[in-house]
Length: 389
Image (cartoon, rainbow, N blue to C red; front, side, top):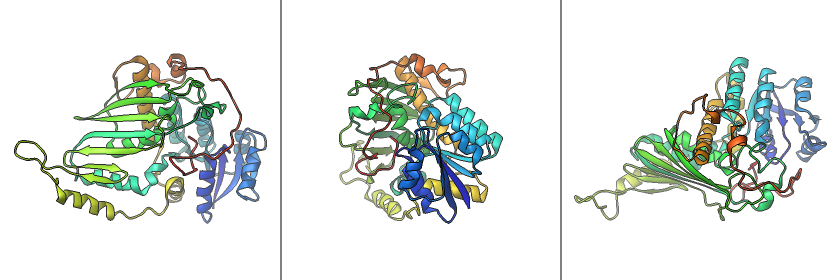
């Protein structure tokens, strides 16, 4: 029976707690820590977790408890120091996205994982969704051919009060705006589907949130071989209509799932009706998808538990988390310096280091309010309350 601790008792901790409770025959939550007085105890009471202990200092929890696995669900600026401390303390770690605000911190976390021999997994729960898994299977099948264009709309909407929470809305405490803290989900999916791009250019803006230093909108172009990808990262899109569209040599597929495929006339124009045989083949592939036994956070946490039991690497590790942060960093560098950024980023690049964004990023506006907590549930997309976004 794995002994589990959770650091951070905010909204996203509910997704982790629910996932661990789904695997109650393999693990038990023995401790929760949060620096806000009484918050950890309230979280344990809310979920009816009897016998677990509450702490106001995560390092005290590390010293007092015999832990096998810890979930870190705190603000991004604290991810690196907590992850390194718990890995060095002999505890396996699953840390919420984004992994850390800088590549320098990501590499320190990966180094601590290698030195400790423990597991480090960075949350990328959307890989554990049937619709995304179906898209991945279609890309990997080769049926669509080489990819010409990838369009990703990471479209979210947040009101002004969203940035009143104490750690949001500044480069120092949040690490960035919607590109880092919202589009990181879609950036990870792009890396999973397509691999790493070679070049990035971008523009950043704050269109609607005059109470935050950080961007609430960015548009980036990424180069993949002969093709291009365009990524919109936003918290200003009403309706939160998120979409991934992949245009291949032979067909177009997307999430939400839809297939179209053209055939050429002798003059190069499309034949009416398209390639119905290929459309049928791709739809049959999607219909044959075997549903995942666990979705979202539950799927990823279940994989980490199995990885500990089976002494193997998790499906999503520290390198995966770092790769997503690298793309975000390239977008920020491209937008701030107004240049095309080549990947991978060199450790000698100023944007590799902690603090560079704080020094160089524009303050679109100044943060006007700072509250310790906010009421109301946390919503992902239209209705699902499971994220810290």
